[in-house]
Image (cartoon, rainbow, N blue to C red; front, side, top):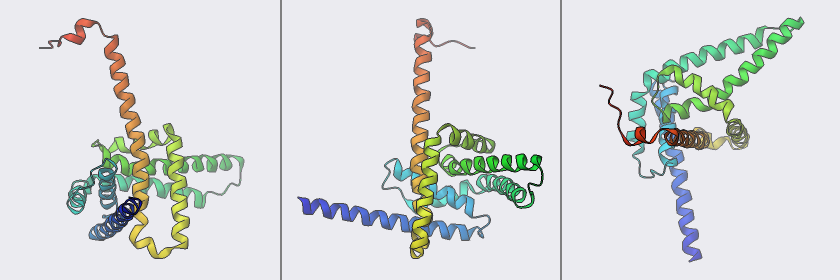
Length: 227
């Protein structure tokens, strides 16, 4: 029995290795399909969407079909959001590169830019999970990515630590970067973000139940005629 269990775990691990390698190569392929610049955002959104399916327990999801479907549907929206992020990131970089603290006012300004840069990085952690999980208007992704990153700071810090550990690992094992780098990072971030989404949805349901309990009984039992 122990031998069968060990063999089952080994096969399961090999299956996940193949999944992660396959999705990583798909990400590279679809990024190149969009000439890199226009392919990065939709390809990464598609990758997170596949990871979300797996995390939800849909092990038999058709990976290529899902990848291609999300890539096409999110091509414009994700690139618009990506353009906004590039503009914000460029402004932060230029400010940090060319603003020298020669006076106390510039010291304060530089410190404010550091804070803004940190908040920008925090929002980046949630952009792709939100794109994969919710269908919103474009402005909501930027707004709620920052709100979630600050409100659930423990998960955000976990993403930061996870990313740092992976970067150190890839620095020592650069040969695995083309096969597992983005897919492992996406799975870890999507898993942590999905825990946040579940907490939010559970809290929303609890609030709805509490509101319903406080309603008069006739409002709970009858549908209000608004016509």
